[in-house]
Amino acid sequence: MKKHLVLVGLPGAGKSTVGRLVAERLQTSFVDIDSILLRKEGKPITMIFAEKGEPAFREMERKEVADALGHEPAVIVPGGGWAAQPGTLDDAKPRGYVIYLKARAELAAGRAAPSGTRPVLMGDDPVVEMRELFKTREPYYAQADATVQTEAKTPEQLAAEIVRLAQTSAGW
Image (cartoon, rainbow, N blue to C red; front, top):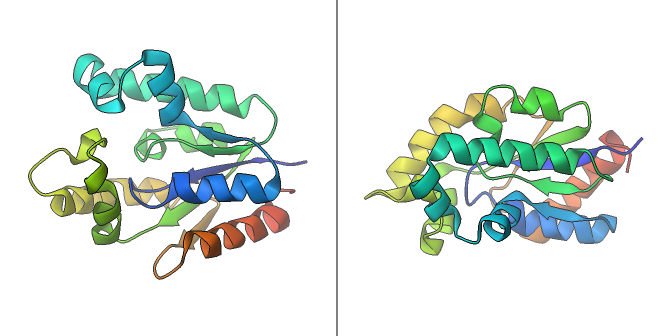
């Protein structure tokens, strides 16, 4: 039986970019949780964080991932902090194959910071903040079913690697 593919990792690790490519290659749906929340709330993630706080945002995110896991198998991309919430990976694993896109903090910060849409990176030094995120989130990310190193790989190469994992380990 096919399992959902759930991509986790730091902001800027490439989850959305690679996830779209994987969904295209597997001819399945792509579910970007941040995009769903943006559409439902009618405001950017940074504003949801500012107005409702991180705990409320994480609860909204958790509900959207749970909803997505209840539908046909797809590529699901939650925000970078979703996997670092206690119990989320355990809840997802029965229906989803969780893949950690592992990126160095410096690389992820360089990709994430220019967008200015990541509330956890809004401080003075995005690289320092990303290193701190890596340190606190890595133990959670490491609980994924598989880890894919992103260093020196194109999005296309990463997508091909994830498609192989999907075919050998997630029933695709």
